Length: 354
Picture 1: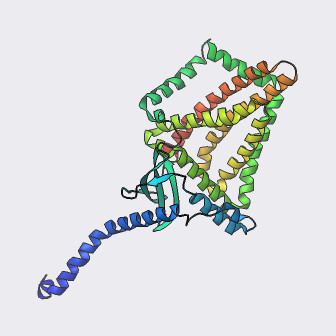
Picture 2: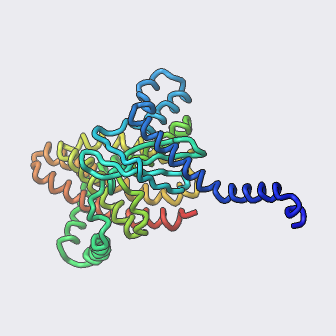
Picture 3: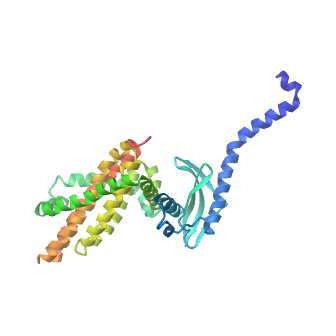
């Protein structure tokens, strides 16, 4: 204390350094916001835009880098209006995310800027609630999902309509056993092939995982994590059932099955590539493997149903009989998705939690 008392200038410098240390985190946070604000303006001006076609003919490493940038900085949607005066900053494992309120054609949302070590790595618009309906985050929807899950399990043990549909579905599987096994071998085989091909280019796998992560963010699945296992399971089941089972498998299956088979062949190969253990911790991959097997079986059943529809139509049993068969397979697939949603939500939030 005597040295500070005898040297006032030294004491003043010590106080200033102490104040600077206290203010440093605030100034750093402010700098993140300012970087993000400028990045949004540059993004809207087109300074971040990269044409994916530029990757054609480039060496693999450079092509991957160009593709990664084109997806990370996708062009802003038309009519985007951003409020740069109300930023919100959030620390995440992927870096700092600065969010700005925004609207597109009257729909609310936010522009998200991701920064790592002060460098902008991603910018994109996320509509409010993502692509999910607003009611899906309502506790009443969660309660109905629990009732559906328990009620369905109990119904299968009794003699009722749901139990009869269940028996009819598996009876069709036994009737067309060779076709069912063939579809399983073909689609699961393409998934495994995609995983093996991924080992030839792990950098491209990481890019695919970035794309998948960005897509899930756009859908709004990330926001469902706050609802716990139940809230996340509801969202997973809804999205997989509506977009995976019905829109991209059952509907194409109505056209004599072939479109559903071709679409899922491509989907299984891409999923195998993106979910390859080459770019995932082995423990996480093994924990996620039951989800993969169960949920992909749901789409296999619906694809199989489309092929049965084709056979029944061509064998003069009639399109109506084939449509009934497809409906039974969609029913079985929905049950697999229900089981898969519960396990996937539990594995993400409990088993894989750091």
